Image 1 (spheres, rainbow, N blue to C red):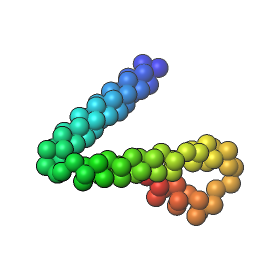
Image 2 (cartoon, rainbow, N blue to C red):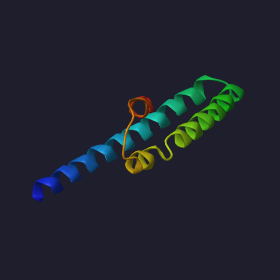
Image 3 (cartoon, helix red, strand yellow):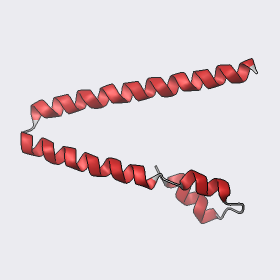
Image 4 (cartoon, rainbow, N blue to C red):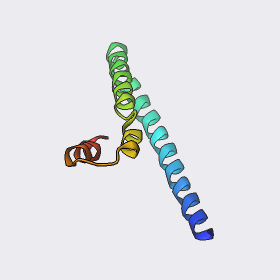
Length: 85
């Protein structure tokens, strides 16, 4: 049981560290872009990022639950899941 606990904590650590790194990197890039491009282009970029984030969120809703409930998998369903972000 201790081996499983260690693996879970190690996975949590790497997931948390990756999320923190990604967040700080995104803030850094946004800061550089805010200084580099003009206000209207930056606003347009932010609006596009909101649309992309919403599309990414809605594309991932329900895929895992649907796979758990399906008893017989078809090859084309597994290909769609494998290729979705």
